Image (tube, rainbow over all chains, first blue to last red; front, side, top):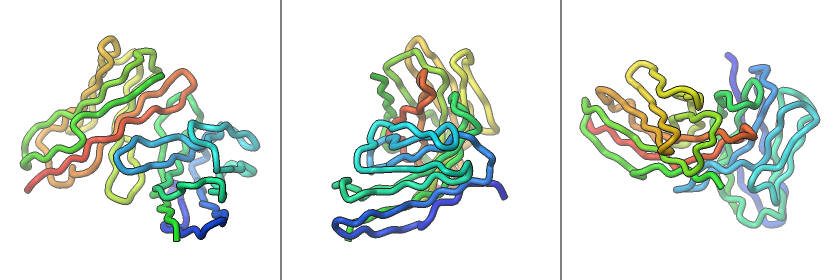
Length: 113
Length: 111
């Protein structure tokens, strides 16, 4: 079945550690997105990519990094510079940008040890 | 700066009732508006997308309306069922095709 796979489902980060969240899609979508979700708040955009080898910062990019070397993959690294990383992270994709419906993975919950 | 608000934050109704969820936005210059559903600990599922030139969209028991001039959208759920229990989020697409999100309405349908 076509879809978006995020792994791991749960992740724990130690002080000073970088961690990488995986996002893979087999929908042949050009655009991919990373969001952060905190309780009681709307989703906030971290990074997005509309084509391979290109990506743009969203509203809260500080402390995060991404790469887009393949169309299917858009991994997110939470660096030690992100001082409050505890959140639910959601990856999404859409055929192109342009406000088309975004398809979401099941998320990764990141916590601090 | 576009802001999206969803009120109430939570809603509990008996099974079988018709209900309306509200979404308001501050800047009427939107590309489209989308409604999503999120089950606990899960990702989001797109329910309905309304283009800025449209007034409403329907899918099964769901009907979403859009009034750009007043900055409002409603999601109408007919004959609610316990399986409709979830958090419902709305998001507007701006000129850069990014989504601006509301915080969601948590809906509980009581059997």
